[in-house]
Image 1 (tube, rainbow, N blue to C red):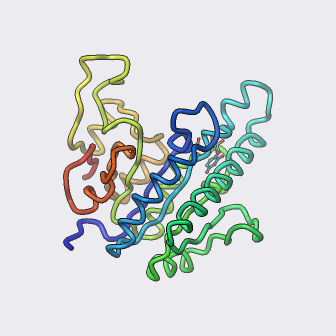
Image 2: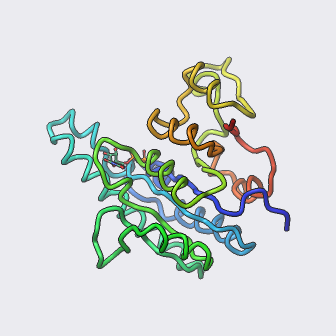
Image 3: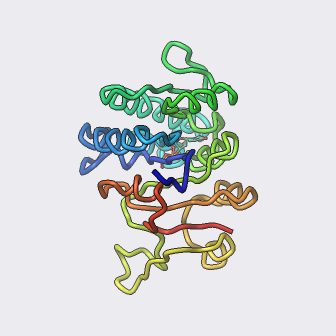
Amino acid sequence: MQLKYKRILLKLSGESLMGEQQFGIDASMLHHYANQIKVLVDVGVQVAVVIGGGNIFRGLSASKSGIERVQGDYMGMLATVINGMALQSALEGNGIYTRLISAIEMKQIAEPYIRRRAIRHLEKGRVVIFSAGTGSPYFTTDSAAALRANEINADVILKGTRVDGIYSADPEKDPTATKFDTLTYTKVISLGLGVMDMTAFTLCQENNIPIVVFDINVHENLMRIVRGESIGTLVEG
Ligand code: UDP
């Protein structure tokens, strides 16, 4: 099978695990993602996932209600480990070999991050789940996605969202908003489009890593992107 991308970094937000719930993890969403990832693994795509934590805890929002920012950020990072464990379990239930890696050491449940080891897992066909973000407060899991994608030489960052790409305005608020099929990094910045936070986005731009923003909830979208179909919005060069 002809594949456009052979090693991908999939960014899954914590919110994407909530489904219709207001908080936490919806098991049916986990299984949906596990199924989509399995199709990729079965055709030999190397899959790394960076998982968010916003469905459980966000440092910045918590700081507004009195939890000190850095403390809150570490709590947010721990939330991503919980999500990572849930995703690992769903993937393994699908017969996929996985490794959960944490940027904060917690050896009983996750491997510490060692770049060469993570790459070796991918080469062996194991799905690598990166949790605990970058391991540092004041960052986001989008930054972790950009960082890890560079470190493992991923061909692309696939940012799974609930909308089907990048729009000129928020499509849920503005009916005149139009969708972009492709964009350059400079256009994203000049139009002030919110693809990722700036730290993450700049890292992708500097290292020329393409980003595809797409609707993760549409069945088979992931596979179609990997095969080269124009789904969502592609940001590059
Ligand atoms: N976080 C952090 N450093 C990182 C990644 C995450 O401090 O490198 C914290 C931060 O408080 C953030 C929370 O973890 O709000 C959850 O991550 P994020 O908001 O990126 O999750 P997502 O929006 O993808 O669900």
